Image (cartoon, rainbow, N blue to C red; front, side):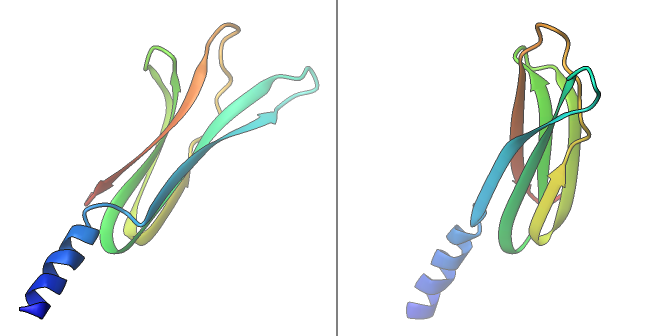
Length: 100
């Protein structure tokens, strides 16, 4: 009975990763001060095949850059840098999913 309960608890624990985080990266790419943006994401999910996605999106949801990494235990990925249009509002989004 106790092993059954432990089995149920461990299967529930693997429904979500232990940790997932993302962040926005920026850098000046020329002497004129042009700013470029990239997105970084990482996921830790012990013993589980999973995919982590980082995306540069504008405020209307249009994807400008995207990158994925699939592995067991730990994934991290960074998009290529993107130079937004003058009035384009850029957001970084990160996602995880179980499997490929």
